[in-house]
Structure formats: structure tokens, C-alpha cells
Length: 93
Image 1: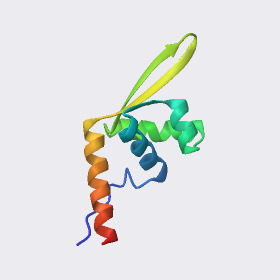
Image 2: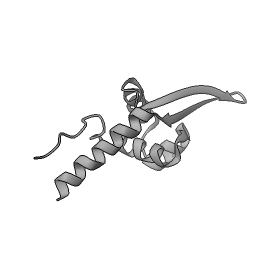
Image 3: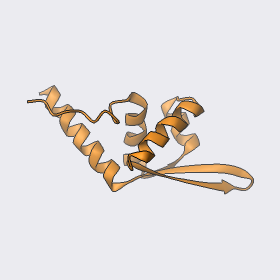
């Protein structure tokens, strides 16, 4: 029997963001934008969706006079990612 896949993580960009954050724990917006190849607008929308689901936490601050957005994975996000990976493994067997 196949386990259902988390629709929030089934999006390529959201899965890429969570995968990156699982490995680095915390990352700046620019790093995520560079690594995913996403546009700033699309990345911003997807980060908001992950934040609303409490998979990530977003902190907004300033570095000098420039805005700085930092994202970090939450325990809930790690759990969702691990469940998603296990479900995918079931599909591959």
C-alpha cells in the first residue's frame, strides 16, 4: 500500500527548499534563491506557504541598510521531510 505524499512537499521548489534547510539548518534568502534557481517572487510565495505550515521559521532583519531574510527548518518541517522521504521509498520498492 502506498503512503500518501505530503502535497506541500510535493512541489519541486518547496521540496528543494526543505531539502536544503535540512542539511544546513538555516539559510539566507539569497542562498536559497541561488541554489534553487527560483525567481525572488516565486521563492517568497513558496517560503510563505512553508512558514504557514510551520515547516520553516522566517526571520526578517537588516544587514546594514539592507533587508535580510533568514529561514530555518523547524522540528515539524524535519518530521514532514522524513515522512515524505519514507513515503517515496515505498513507491520505489
